[in-house]
Structure formats: structure tokens, C-alpha cells
Image (cartoon, rainbow, N blue to C red; front, top):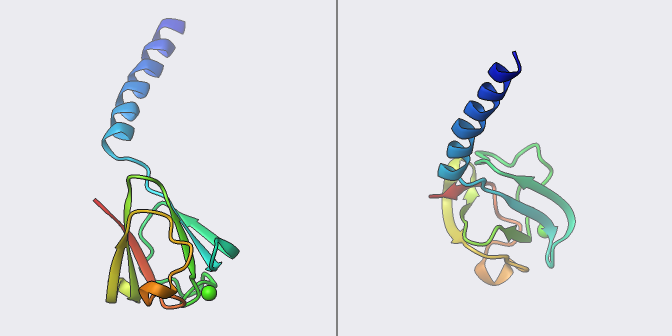
Length: 108
Ligand SMILES: [Ca+2]
């Protein structure tokens, strides 16, 4: 019984370990104000519409995991003009994206 359990544990560790290596965990944190202040929202997945999160057209800074790239768009469903960010942005105003983001997704 114990042997079966150990085998199963190794099997799942191998399978899911491989999946984890193949697909890095994306993560981005959105902030209501510049300099990473105010309300925040962290997501590891695409957000088709920020409506209902309290941060639609309100994001002013973002923190991105080093090495990852995220597409930020002015309209929902990744439309309306987008930028790709690959680092923390303490103030989106110079990029003309302050209080304008409505959708986002990771970029492979
Ligand atoms: Ca804001």
C-alpha cells in the first residue's frame, strides 16, 4: 500500500513538475495610483474586461514579474490600442495609459 502511494506521488510530481516548467506562472499586479499605491489586483491570467473589478480605467502603475511580458489595452477584449510591458511601471501617464487600461493578457 505504501509502495503504491509513493509511486503515485512520484508520478504526479513528475507530471505536474514538467507542466510547471513548460508553462511559467504569469503574474501582474495592477495599482490604482502611481508608485504602486491604492487598490491593487494581482492576476496570473488574461483579463478580458476589467469592468467589475473596480480598476477599469483606473490603473496607474503595474508590477510585472521579471522576464515576463504583458499586453495592456485601452478597451476590453484587447482592443483600443495596446502596449507591451516587461518591467515595473511606476507611472503609466508618460505612456498615455494612465486610467485607461480595460483588458490585459500575458504575451508568450
Ligand atoms: Ca488611477
